[in-house]
Image 1: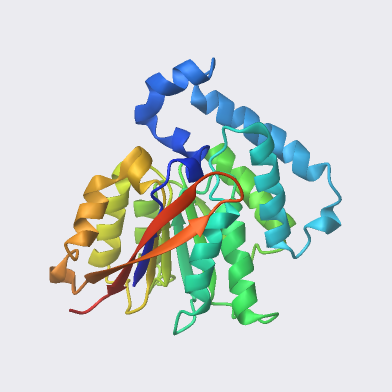
Image 2 (image 1 turned 90 degrees about the vertical axis):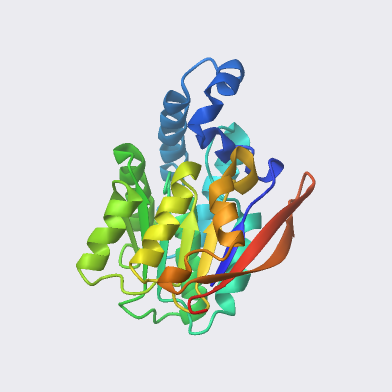
Length: 270
């Protein structure tokens, strides 16, 4: 498996606010609670998107993801996984063999990354995406889930992308018990950093990794996920047949410094 772990503060200037431990810093930067700001931004974003011709986004998830990112860059205080980082994961997914069939993500917010994964899947499969190829996205916030579902429908990928309200661990267990997720080709971690490691371990416990699977984790140095990084650097849980190998990838932003993104390549049998 390969895991991509973002480790630059500049690259996540908006999504870094997602970490609740930054409350004191955020209080100085914003006069309102972050939850209120996120809600306001979501309402503004919805209007911004639906004020545009629907035809601009019909069957075009990447166009919608790009428009959401444009809005986020204008207003700030939005937790999105930018295209500069998506492209790193895209490069890995395009060469993944067997080709990806199941992608899961922890932390939907407004659905930007879920739309991006859908666009990549369509790029891989062309016009005929098999019915069992799925992107599953998990988020506990009902309002964000509702908005993400609207965007998924607008982009015409509701058969491919499924957004679930609730903690990712419970959602994944349910999907596994229902036989809908028997293997994971990529897992994207962009929720509460303290949950990265427990959710990674759950995937191991359910035996969902395969050789060549991808794990993508954002914000691993700021706000930080040290326990997650320590775990994968020491090869994870051998008891579940998981071995993590290390290499690194780099990306650059249109503005700002170079963003270093170390990658972890996993093989699920030592």
